[in-house]
Image (cartoon, rainbow, N blue to C red; front, side, top):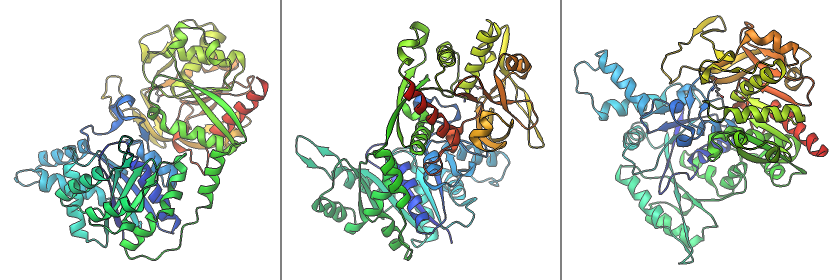
Length: 541
Ligand code: GLN
């Protein structure tokens, strides 16, 4: 029997609902339950694929090729359960479904309305593809009181009514702010938020109260009293030094115990030893390295959420703290790269889109290659490294990417056809922007004896993609003879997946996004290896 836990948020956004859901998922797993985690986003975009990273942070890609909210990355990192397309829905997707049904005449002449047609579609989504797991945790994006989230709240209210309280539960995350002038923690916003939820027919079963300091018992009692709860159902969620500490503090505050109590379940206490171990490693590393991330969206680190986490994981694997220098690549178009990169131990050029800042990334790749500083190019970062190699090693001054328009030597270009397993997939140059990239998991064959093969200890891997352009196979022979090895290819041999410079201490470009699969307990081998190379570099400089 699958039980559903709904996580809503109140007072302000950015309180960390995603991390709360992910942490609860991990705790329930620790008690022996199977979990799935889902995100319901109230915005009208069909998916976040076309949204600017400034607007919505990173686009997280699943194995089955869905472009989703970055919270799905937290879910995967905390629980190890691979997210699927069916774990992410938006108002846009729900409405597309409902309108398509209406056009097909499936509503048999009825007037199509938010209630029941839209709410029914939301309920279907919540209950679809759950594989009999013990718990489905559904996070509702946005903040209670937003106009957009009303149909979602209505749908979960109905579902709780239909399935019964023994199969459903509501967790509400709020803020208990410290008011310096009063010298007090204030519970009023939480009370109002719980009331706002009541106004749409939802009584919270647990309040998670974000706070920057311990909440005194009197304040906790007050919140309980005003929000129809027992004191134990008011769980303080105090700020912590690393996100991987959240499951530990939630457990200490009795969160998972209250969930079990709600569902009348007896389950063994979770063993949190491994969480304690990684938290300890993050807090007390044995060394430090500094990595420059040369990108475009460097002002908003949420745009590179999984990347930042994967570097933390690489640090855990090597017992070091990885300091990140976020550098806007456009700087290198005005200034010499040397002064910004001289003291870093590794350079990483992440995924990106568009011409702006690309010359700066090419300059960063050149600096890394010439100075023998470890270089890790991810997706766009690999493409820029290949352009750099074509210009510097082959003398093709007009080398570029057809993403930026026509150029004499498109060493990165648009591929219109490729194989996924036995199926031919196509892409049209003028097609829709949303969901038309090479998306999701694809196999890659690695050349035996290459650095990539040693890093992965494997010659066939699967990694996730999100891009429209590819390194142009027609330049392969020339680039290889100039020293750039194409060490990973798609199984049909058409799409370059990994390039490396064997003559360099660590210079690797990958067309996929390894950061999406890195986990604290299973750091991605490329990140482990890159951080180790940076550590070696730090001993040289
Ligand atoms: N803009 C490049 C492409 O579409 C790279 C995309 C990326 O880095 N994710 O191929």
